[in-house]
Amino acid sequence: MDNSLPIESPSMSRRQLLNFLTGSVVAATASAAAYPVAKYFIPPKETTEGGAILAKDILGNPIPASQILAEPPGTRALVAGLAGDPTYLTVQKDGTIDGRGIVDSCTHLGCTFPWNNIDQEFQCPCHGSRYNADGSVLRGPAPLPLKLVQVAVKDNAIWIAPWTAIDPRTGEKPWWV
Image: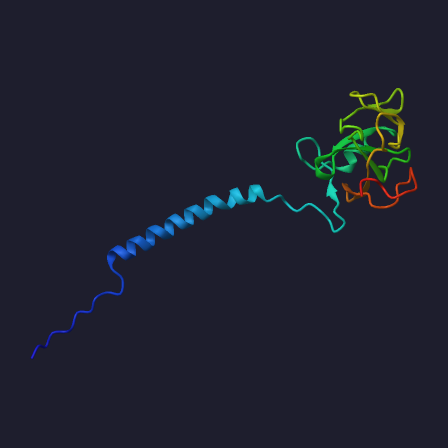
């Protein structure tokens, strides 16, 4: 009779253990590298229920309302609005920001244009379209008034939302809705 104990084979060989540890280290490293890449491609959520976004400067930093309100009344500040479109905000005489912003995109061919403070109108340099202070067409070839956005100030933050109400300049449903 043999009085020796039976030798059982281990459930995992040394090679399997090393393969498992190597795979775990590679998976952890790949996950750690993929996380920042994935975060880069997923934009941060900066909208409210109504689709409003924060007004930003050219570098993508939110602009505090106090910065724009420090300017004299009648000043038109250009900010990045909905979908990054340049949008004019106006400082009113009572020291607030107007509830309507005007998108800086000509309705003729989509050119951007400056506000001419001397003539008190928007003037498109490409084909000569002119718009008055509220964005209505003064002279073509632009066929439609400028697009409006809603502007609200909450806690020193400027929120820009799509304009979905009746266009106050025409009394009709806005052409951009």
